[in-house]
Length: 130
Image 1: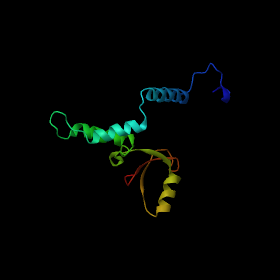
Image 2 (image 1 turned 180 degrees about the vertical axis):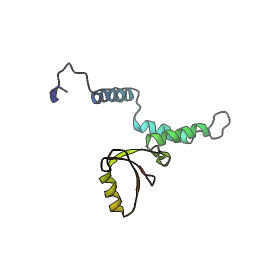
Image 3 (image 1 turned 120 degrees about the vertical axis):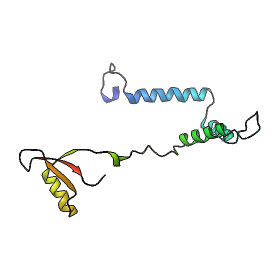
Image 4 (image 1 turned 120 degrees about the horizontal axis):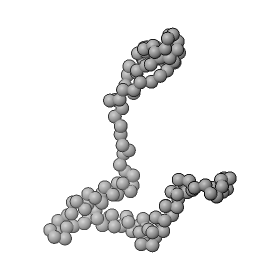
């Protein structure tokens, strides 16, 4: 931060804190020999593990190994948000509404005049869900 012209008294930024934490974690992983290769090898072993009591596949442990593998590999899709159930109000001027209708060739926005004059501000709700 000093290179950027900040006083040394300024608290470290979140980026520096994040890097410091990452460095500490990497050091701890190396100290306990938790390399990516070793972690993957252990996960691979868990995918085929057997319950020592029954001698049958340990489905719970295998499922946890699959889930952890998917998390580490970022295989899960991002969280989806259903926007069809949202009802949002937006503020636009009437010229924007008219331009959108002119471009589309149809009335796409139901507009309700809020301001005193027609060309001030319009509160609109989209006729089609986003």
